[in-house]
Structure formats: structure tokens, C-alpha cells
Image 1 (spheres, one colour):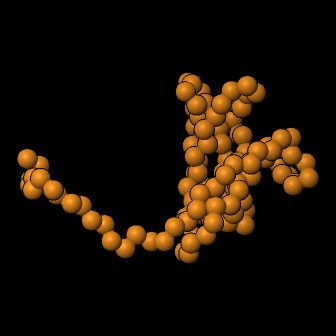
Image 2 (image 1 turned 90 degrees about the horizontal axis):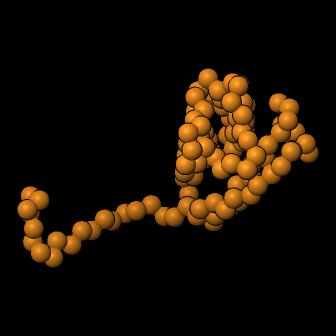
Length: 116
């Protein structure tokens, strides 16, 4: 589930290892049905072919364990984002959700205290 407030979300988008960074005024982020994020390019900056970009979005972990599922990333020419009209699509592996950590143990085998 994507983190959102009244359907609006915040993301970071930048060229990986590059100088192109998109500002909040370049992007419009909306969450549709909790598990679908729509990102609209609003400014003059463009995503260019042949370059690698990093997209960071905030999500909530589910309340229970689950197997890793696949994430889908599609791009569209128009704002309808109809599932049958993507320009391209990618599928990314997700991560499994593990049980909650109950115990955390640090063994101080050298009996070092107060950093020193």
C-alpha cells in the first residue's frame, strides 16, 4: 500500500548517477486504489531513453507476512493510464514480508562499555 494523504503522494525521481533531478513541481503523484501509483510529468523535464533513473516511493508494510510479489511499472502517452495502452512495461521482483522481529541480542564478547 502506497503512503498517501487524500490521494496525493510524494516521490523522488532522479537520473541514476547523473545530474538530472526532478523537483516536486515537475511531478504530480496520485495514489489510485492504494496499490496503484500514478506519476504525471508536469514540468519541462523529460525522461529520456537510454538513461537510467531511480524512482523512490514510500509504502506501508502489510500487517502480515507474505511471499514476494512482482511490481509492474508501465509508461503511458496520455493521462488515462488504461491498462491496455502502455508504451512500455517492466516487471520488478518484490521482497518477502517476514515475521516481526521479537528479540534483538548483541553479544559484547570483549566487555567493552561506554564506547571504549
